Image (cartoon, rainbow, N blue to C red):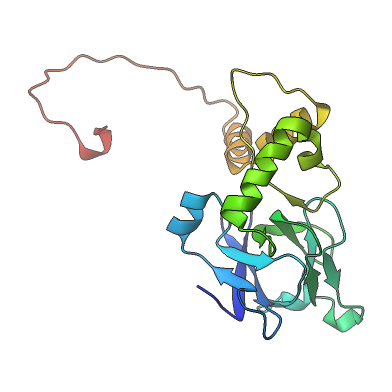
Length: 220
C-alpha cells in the first residue's frame, strides 16, 4: 500500500515499544513509501515499511520524550542527516542515495544510550526489487560475495549461512557472527543466564498411560 507518511516503531531489547518516528515521503513521487502487512513482509523476507533509493525522506520523533531522541544508522554512516538546529535535533532527513537493502536504525537518548531499534527496506528504483534486482545480486554473489557485505555500508541484505559450507571470506564470518550476537534470541539467552545464574534445566522422563488425557499446554 502506498502512503505519504508512516510511523516507524522502535523496540528495546525486551521487545517493548520505546520510540516512534514519523517518516514522510517526498511529494509527487509515486511508490516512494510503501507499507506492507506483516504477512507480506515475512513472506518476502523484507521490512514492512519500504522506501526507495535516490530520494530524501523527512523524519521526526514523536511522543513526550521525543526532543531527547536522536536517529542514526546501526552500521555505517551517510544516510541519516539530523537537523543542524539544536532544538530540532530529533528531526532530520534520510537520504537513501544509491544504497539498497535493509537499513537498520537506532534511537538514542541524550546520553547516547540505545533506546530502541527498527529497520526500513530501501528498494531499488531502476530494477524490479524482488525479481531483477535480487537476481542481479545472486549473480554478483557467485563471483564476488565480499562486495555485498561491505562492512562500512549503512544498508545490508539478509543472508543465511549454509551449515554444509564454510565461510570463504572474513567479511562473511564477521557478518554472520554480528547477526548472531545482535539477534533477539541471543540477547534473550544472555538475559536468562544473568537473571537465573544458579538454575539448571534437566530432562525428566515420565511414564503414563496413553489413554489418559493431558493438559492442553503439553499438546504438540
